[in-house]
Length: 126
Image 1 (cartoon, rainbow, N blue to C red):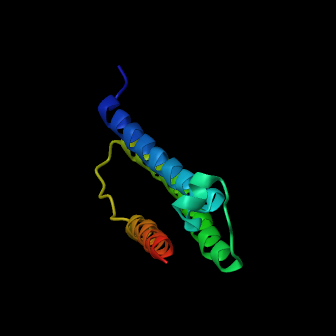
Image 2 (image 1 turned 45 degrees about the vertical axis):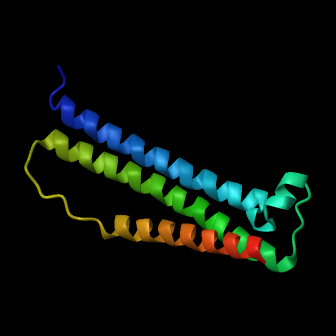
């Protein structure tokens, strides 16, 4: 039997949850950037994606920001996984510091989502 198997398995499940989240954020960014959701549903349904110069920049910035944040999440997940595995292996009691970076990334992803929702809502209404 592997020593501390439950802890190692829980760490791996947490890592995989972070990876799934990061992949979802990257995919969301790619969809935003490639499909140009700012053109509105009628353009998407008809297959005529009309892009005006002022529409391209915000959509690309938001889409690429999502993809970048997803890549950062992948890196953070890998570092956290390795660090936690090391702490489990030592079997020493230590405190786990609260990561402000996690909260900052959560705020960034939430802000991007809110901005994109507002942008699409205003674009569809206009």
